[in-house]
Length: 422
RNA sequence: GGAGAGAUGGCAGAGUGGUCGAUUGCGGCGGUCUUGAAAACCGUUGAGUGUAACAGCUCCGGGGGUUCGAAUCCCUCUCUCUCCGCCA
Figure (cartoon, rainbow, N blue to C red):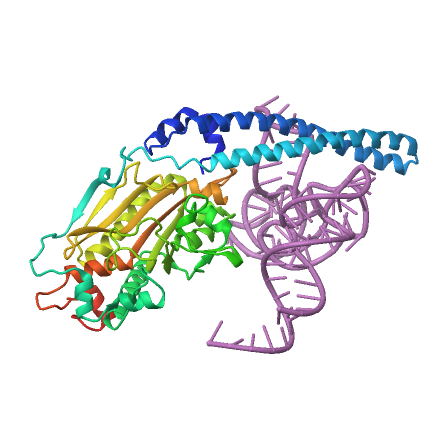
């Protein structure tokens, strides 16, 4: 979340910048500033009360030692009065703190100055494209190709679980594993430390990365244990550093993880859900960096370059879009989506999202670092998919298909697949 | 699932009602010494809030209670560990 201090120092800037996200912050800011003034006033009076109580307690201790019981008793009476006032004030105070926090978490992250205004994905800005998007007349969508080659089985997935949970079979399963290994190996080469993470997280973790309270309905929830199934490895991966104070020399922290991801995708039925386009469970390799605030935009470029490289090595035509204010996530300051072109569907499919959260997540999770002679300050967090599997597989199947119904395996995957054609 | 033990500063580990934000050791940082390093010695070393700076206030797993006063006593929750059972 936005830090209270920033909001207090630049209330108008917060309001103006959130307009880009189509968020009217004016009344929130007003409320927050008002509550904060009240809160500080109560805090001050409470502190004075407590200071007096502490003083009295010390005096009583000494009076008892010197045997002056009568005087001690008088002080006790004063304390009992103070305690009544204390009780009221501390109740008031925690109420104000609760209100303040509840309002503050409703504010989205401030968008970076380069984020364009816009209402929806239509207003995103295409900043880069690569590859050949020409389509041949024989090209079929991946669900048809995959059915012919016995790589995917959607019906059985429905039987076992439900829609959105396909099973990968034969070369389909192997291709999936090849892609995972390729992505992990590339991440390792780029200096990311591989981590295996839990697939369920507790409430604190989901809150820290910003899934709660915003996206509650998008996550699968295990009631008995109060756990959430992760919608992305970003959640456990970033939460490793929740409540940690790093040394400046620890930067940059680079981590990657392969995981399954679970998304309820409530409200998206019917559209774009055919085949592998939108699933409830899918695999992804995620990269996360925790860096010095001054470096975060440089690092964002580095992460973009990493994803570009992956797509180019796979030979998939893609474009990069800068998300507009209407499409960018609640927590992000600047996000670039990567979309590959699937020739069988003649559609752009989002396969990666690379974001700089600046200190938004760090503030929630108290992820800080200590500079040489300074106080602890908030770090910046970034993440990116590198990459999400199903749509990559869809594009691969469609874009690499041959007229006689086979799939040419990209060079970089051939060793992993132990073949060059399916 | 059953039984027991425990949760204190970066780590280890004291502290069972008063001057304890907390002995001590290790680690970290600074210094003396040294050509340099090590060793030794000296000093320093939590976070939040607050202030112009002090002061003050809060924090010994979370919440509640007893008391003039709680790391210390009571209740409760959570988590961790050990043993038994079950099990990939």
